[in-house]
Image (cartoon, rainbow, N blue to C red; front, side, top):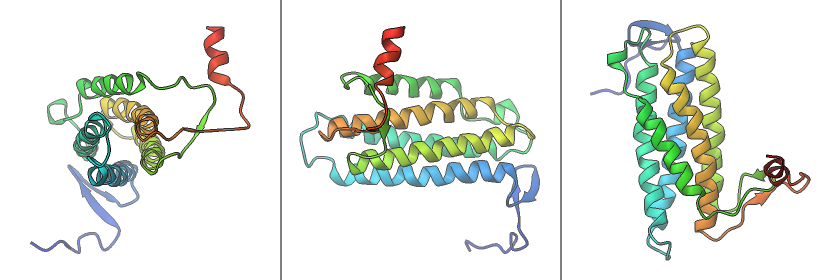
Length: 200
């Protein structure tokens, strides 16, 4: 099978049910999800390469399993966005997937030092990569929101992407804790989180 088709040489491409410009909002949305999936693959590859070289109580293996599952689910998100006129029975992303992300977030947060200041992307190489995933996930969500303003968009994909960026943030913090590397705090900021907690 040849990888090239020449059908897109004039700047158009096919979605399910229509042919659109390659800069259509739908293409921008699931193209950004594809970009995100590649970055998650980089983080997973780092973990796979380094897993087993130190004592982490299986934490690295669990994180790797989660990232590999996220890759599958991001492909589901792209699939759902590829329908010009999606029908409920065609969609793959469901509320259970979003709920599972919330469970993972809560588990990763257990045992972490409480946030006091804003943190910067970095610390360990793995955490830095997960922060890249977080920021590209936010962009994917913005692209999907733009698309949803003018075209049909499955709501659960929007919820999933929103929760996924939170997951990457917490996974990055967990990666630093797992590798015994401190988070990088924003030095010019006040202790906003502790102050907010006290107010509550």
